[in-house]
Image (cartoon, rainbow over all chains, first blue to last red; front, side, top):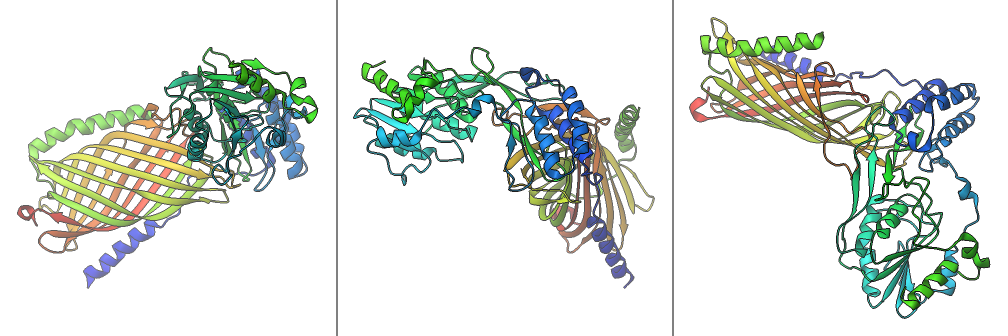
Length: 343
Length: 261
C-alpha cells in the first residue's frame, strides 16, 4: 500500500515537472521605441548591401529614431519605418504593416516611367496558334511565324510547374528559333526560375556568384558561391533563343536572364534589367508586422554587381523606340528581323 | 573564468574515472538490454535567427535505446526525434513546424557503490548530436522560411542508481563542454546548404541533459520504466538560441536472458 502511494507520488511529481511552462525570454516590448530598435538592429545584422549602396546605417538610425518615437499612430509609425528602409534604395526591402496590408517598398525613379511593353499587343498582333491555357496555365506560348515560337513568362511565382514548359516545348518542337519573353516579369521563386532555364541548356554553366551575409559586421559575407545553371526537364530547346528583357525585369527574373545570357545559343534583346538582386528574407517585429531584407550580394561572372546595374542586353532597343505609340512592339519587330536574317 | 573552471573540473572527473573503476571494479548497474519508450514531449524554443519570440509545443515522441556492458564499461545510447508544431508564447506571432532528432552515447564506468550495493555511481563521457529544422510561418501570412540548428557535443556524464520501492530509482546527466554548432546566420539557402560548423565552448554554449526515473522488473526479461527527461541549451551567438525540451516517458526494457535480473 505504501509502495503504491509512493509510486503515485513519483508519477505525479514527474508529470507536474514535465508540464511546467518555462519562460526563456522576457515578453516582447511593443512600444514604438522598442519596435524601431528591433528593426534597426535586425537590419544592421542582416542586410547584405550597405557597402554596395553606400549607406551609413548609424546615421540613418539617428535621423529616423526621433521621428518614430514621435509618431502618433500606427500608420504614421509605419511610414517612418518604411522611409527608413527606403533609404537603402533596394526594391527587395519592404515593410508589411500587418496581415493583409500592402507592402510598403522602395520605388526607384525608373519605376515611375511609363511601361514600354504591352502584353496584349503581342497577343493581339503577333501571336498565332496559341497553346491552350489548360496546358500552360502559368505562361503564354504560341507561334510568331511558322519557324519562330514564342513563350512569355509573366512571373516566376509558385513552384513545381516546370513540367508545363516540357509540354510547351513538346508542342513547339518544330520551331527553328524560340523567343523567350520575360519583359515586366517581377520575379518570384529563384529555384523555379533556374529549373525553367535549365530546359535551354545541355550542360552545367556558371552564370554568377553570390556572397551571403554571415556575420554581424556589414562586410561579413561568405566567400563567393557560384550560381550554376544545370540541365533540367524532359524536353529541351537548344536552338537559337532570343531573350527579351526590359527595365521591369526584377529579382529571380534577372537571375533567369543572367543565366540565359551565359548560354552561347541565346541573344538577349531589349533593355537592361532592373538591377534588383538581393534574395530577401522575411523578418518579424514583435507586433506581428513583417519586413524583408536582402541577404546576399550577387555578381556577374566578370565580377560586376548585378544590384542597380542589371543585366544588359546583347542587342539594345532603346525605350523610346520600344513604345512605338502602342501599335507595334519594337523589340519583337527587331527580333523577327534578326530571326529572318539568322542573326 | 567559468570556462576554465568547467574545463578543469571535466579533466579532473575524466582522469579520475579509470583509476576509480580499476580500483573498485564495480559491475554496471544496468544490464545489456534494448529499450523503447513513448512519451509526451514539450519543446520550448527561442531562436533569434528567426525572431525573439518563444515558441512552444507538445507532441508524442518515441525513444529507442540500448545498453551494453563489457569489462566493466557501461555503454548506453538512445535516440529520439519527431515533428511537432509550436505556437508563440506571450503574444507573439506566426507558428513553427519543427523536425528534430537527438542521439546520445555515453560511456561510463562504475566508480562507487554503497556497502549494501543499493546505490551505485558511474562517471564517464557522453557524446550528443542534435539537429533541428524549423519551418517558420509568418503571422501575416507572407510565407515560410526554413532555419537550421545542429549541435554535436562531448562532455562528462554520470549515472546513479538506487534500489528502492521494489525496483530502482535512477538519475543521469551529461554536460556539453565542447561543441560543434551549425547555426546559419540567416535562413537556410539552397546555394549554401552545407553546414557552417563553429566550435563552441562552455562560455558560449551551456546546457545539459538529464533524466530522473524509476524502473521495475515486470517479468524475468522485461523491465518497465518511467522517466522524466530534460534537455536545455543556451547558445550565446550573435543570434542567440535558447531551447528547453522536457519529456515524460513510459516504456520497457528487454534484457538478455542470461542477464535477466
